[in-house]
Image 1 (cartoon, helix red, strand yellow):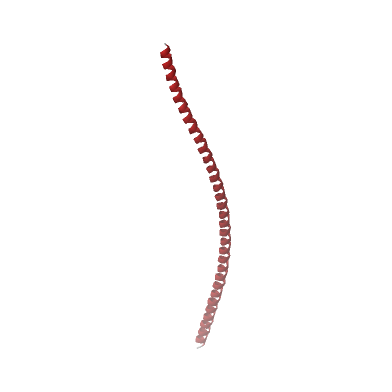
Image 2 (cartoon, one colour):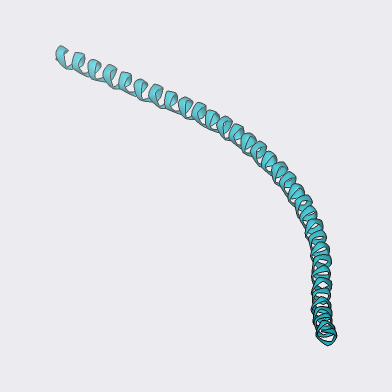
Length: 119
């Protein structure tokens, strides 16, 4: 019978030891989970800060590009207006030259007719 009480004592000690190991393991897992959650929160916060910074920089660059585009569009608009004026002047010159050439042809014909009459 003595061996039975020793066996029961050993089993009880083993069960208590196993229980303590389970409790300890569970506590360590909770502690690790809390630390991981804290680390994940820190990483998310840092990423959000970086994302906000990048968004801000991109917004600034977009605004600068928009302003530059508007300036370029204004300059191009002015240049097109100047070219239109120059083209209008050119077209008027072409019309006047055409009229002069027509008059020259008319004068040449009159001159030839006069030469024929005199000859």
